[in-house]
Image (cartoon, rainbow, N blue to C red; front, side):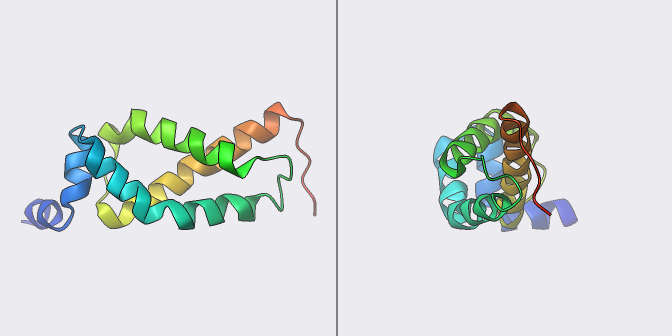
Length: 101
């Protein structure tokens, strides 16, 4: 019964997992502002991070991995933020990051 409730309450996530690019874009638009704000907040610790590049890379990775996304519509932004965090860490390591304390 729970799986039926989840699928009926998250049609965009279901469609995105199935490869529907319009559904993926709708989820992305709904979470873009908060994910970009999260990336900018990480710049305090990783100042060499380019927020726009990090967001685009996170979107690219998310598009490749959306078939493995297990959440519902409400979870998409958190999932994308996790991917963005990993992108920021990877960018920072490539550019010789230093953490300000």
